[in-house]
Figure 1 (cartoon, rainbow, N blue to C red):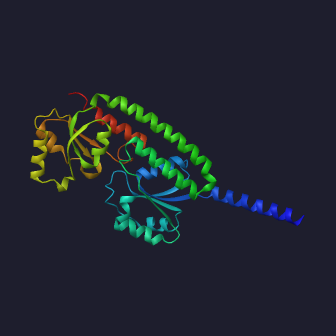
Figure 2 (cartoon, helix red, strand yellow):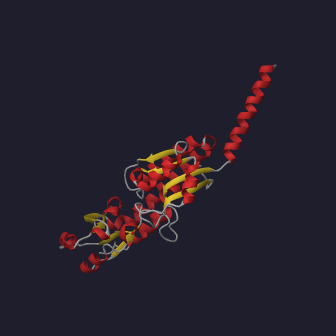
Length: 272
């Protein structure tokens, strides 16, 4: 009978361990608000979070606090974009939390505002979270499936709204060009950050647009909301600002609000 008692004790211990794990908060360091949004959705907001870059900020600009470093030192996992892995402040944050912190570089190609890329990011983050917290695995999978269904519905609605814009030419910030091409627009020429634009660049952009039925100039909030304003005024076309990250504007606190707001702003370019 001793073996039976041992089996009971082991089973009780495993059950207690799983319950203790499930009750404790999952501590996550998120690279951006894009990652934060997915983590909160897939965990039912049960994760404790520190986000390195806020939604309205450029990912290359951050102001890490001592409290962020302390949080990372006791966190379960860090989910950061691949491009952030070379940033000195991010590297310092992660190095300070070694060796216990699990670091996952999210090498997901494409703009995360595009629905198919958002689906890839959701699946990958769901896999990581389930591996870090196995007792939540079933719930994370259920929430992943639900989120993917919401993305598909949001994509269908966006495509209907964007249909009148198909093929319309625009000048655009390089940080929004990929999303605009997904949206069906013809990006005639891209430009960089406001501080990098020279008079020669502006002349070249105007020349590229000359003779074309330009729908507008599209800027990226995080790299300079007014970078293309002078171009739009010179060409007498609308100026639109889009965002790449949730938390940029009121009502755009998650991916779905962000996509909806970006599409609403683009829809204003539909009238020739």
